[in-house]
Length: 601
Image (cartoon, rainbow, N blue to C red):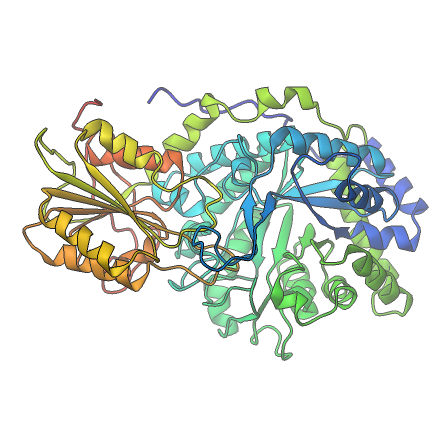
């Protein structure tokens, strides 16, 4: 790998304090707004960042929200492809559709058209948790928080944030709803996991502050989420309401510490969580997003935060199945939220907020403060002067080899060898070695970021031309498993790659029992050489404790797959450290060092 640049040019410079011209625009604009317009400013609907013709129902809906409803902005998602409701094809899955990524030129062009339609500049948000490439095809796909934390390098975190922000601004996005500052101290958390910097509050705080510093240096607004902490739950709030039943002192010792650090470092926004915390608000059924004691009492008054407060997506079932869209929006704003994000019915959300002000449930001074915060954010971003982006400049500012080198460096520095009992790593197979490569996929459907192993297997084949590669999913039958066992028995080396996702609203985070049993059986044969590489969820290690050699990557995609192969063959050093613990197996900070010892083929 070549030298990685310390900093890449951003689409905009660092955010500056609001000047006198911006202050005047904020005051003048706020003074002219009607109550209806103020209520609409607090609502940010979602959109799909795909090619959207002007003559389409999708664009007409978005243009009406921008021009007539006068919403405050939009949140950029990827796309989705409708799939037939068949039951026998395992590739389809059960979600009713296949998720795809957004297209960079389509995003920039669509946002420009909506900005032109809006009377006031729109504030555009996105979840760039793995860089812009997490949502947008062709943009730089950065490893997420846990991988960065495994490197223990705050400089890498800052560079990742700056890179993500530069690409985001080039696309017309202004707010990165990141970093996740939740402390992942529950191994069975089905929604945070690798999105967190780990389980140590001090480390999470340091890495999160470095990342948000990079985001701001790249010209975007940063966000700490999910307040007051979503790490210690085994419930996915995309599916149902979660409860964190800790004492106030326990929350202060763990969950709140990264938020306090982020606030002290000047984070621009905080996102609420759809979880109940009885120690902070005993009201039955009331999540933090709708809790005034939490958003106003704790966040605003006790912690002194005066930036923007975003709700998490109001379309998540923890909210949408318990409250009507107008009621939920009004309750969130009454609790202290400034932005109602991705409501299932934006018009109803606006109506609910306006009516709550009219009937006195929300004070007029409060809604004015929220609108003023939003206008200030827009002016700090320079949107009062220039709200369009240069679509023709996107290919220069988004993606490319130079930026990909940063992602590759993070992926390589993250690799953590937590176990190597037989000293197999680095691998040294001979030309005559019989090598079996197994790709164990959690389930067949829903792979938005390409086929698992599409780089891992070819890279291994370059080093072991005669290898045999097989893919096993949760639908692999008993007969096929028996064939795998026979092949393994005749192999000199077995390399097993696990691909286990923690996907919102999937309810899944494990290998299938048959896959776990296979790995355990292969590990139980002391004469067989077995190395397991875990892509994605690192906690898969707890299900296969007898595996003799285990390398963790914390991520998916081309960069971690390439890095893993190079590390396995001694072409790159291994020096990562585990950001979480696995009781009975590995302690926090576990990791074996391996120096680079081989040459690339």
